[in-house]
Image (tube, rainbow, N blue to C red; front, side, top):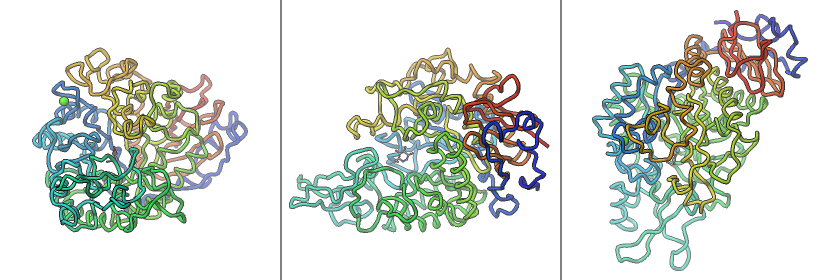
Length: 587
Ligand code: NOJ
Ligand code: CA
């Protein structure tokens, strides 16, 4: 395979367009040509997942078959052809299990069933079969850090009382203070407020406290208990036997807590957020989690086919995250450092390079992600001033993103991402350029974050709104009725799939083109070599394509060759304007 380094590389330095004005003169670009990601023929890992584009379905908000305003499994099955036409390789389904829905299904009451809201187990089987018959792989969500408080184990723990084996499956402790009326430590919940709730004893008097890093309806499990470990191995088997291709593992960095449950004076963030040499929060990224994933990996490897584990681990720096994807652990980990990186050339260069180096260091592929059901959609996030800290939702009265700028940058960011080697995750609706709902009435909000933070954090409802399929249909085609569990903003009509399908230049057609070319050129398993890493322009070569993103204030020359994809039109004289990515095919 051709190596994309050395003087023979055609790129922006030597091409016709470059000669015209000279990118180095125009932009101050440092035209270093150097490989970052090794020739993949030297990499030990292969498999569908190493280069897959995986589409996240948030079942509540994808498609509603029965018209009750909540998306469901039959709705997904009926829309699978959309995903085939889009060109993705796999879907990841957020939880659809029986649940009181205290955290939109991330509070699981039964790991082996389907909530009637979403359908039946037979509907799940049908969805898996129909998807796989179309060549789409299926990944389901596994939530091992906590159960729902409605899980039979938690009910049994409450009934059994202090010191019982039933309570030992969770993290129960006596309170501090004379009457035990103070929580056992100072930990805060990720959703706001204390991470402990006191229960009532059998005698009707206040009793012990239990730990919940999230909502009180999500008690944390005790992963030092062998019964807990055995149960989850069995849950994995249950879904593996039904034919799923893998699991996205929720809060994978949280299962093991520091044994002494020491106080942690700092504010709670789901991010481990530490430099290598600084103490990590006692609830995140403890070394003990890795043993669990080794057991799971051994189980998955005993099944035919390539079944995968994907870590949702908000772990920094990249070297710590890479530990989750060592050869005998998980296959992938979400790259949240990439998602959180600023929209500047140096920040993007740094995070891409660091990510590739960290995962190359353990022989794993890198992943890329810009949006999911927990963060402000990137079409809106990138419309906020560069450098704005990660917003925890946007609502009425908050600074509103510049919608046009956000969409322009989102398209450029997505086209940049889809050219990178590794696996990429898409979140439903981003292929339509959907913005966040940033003016949702607060009364409509359902994310527990809004209440638990004392109305200081808006939460995640704005990225979870049911998506638009047909501009002129009720609920924009989300379902057969007007019903929608969160209100859809009027501006979404113009983003509906039927307004974009077949329309040159639409965001939907841009994604389709990018996914087709990515596949044709094998970009996911390609070799990345930087061509330009300046303050304003990033450019790299991945096999036969040269990719350039202009973050600067003035148009820059396009790389030499045939422009095969552009996130927005080039200037009349063929230059790449501000906030635009191009893919150029060159010899
Ligand atoms: C991460 C999930 O993505 C999020 O939606 C959920 O609230 C927490 N984990 C708790 O399960
Ligand atoms: Ca429904």
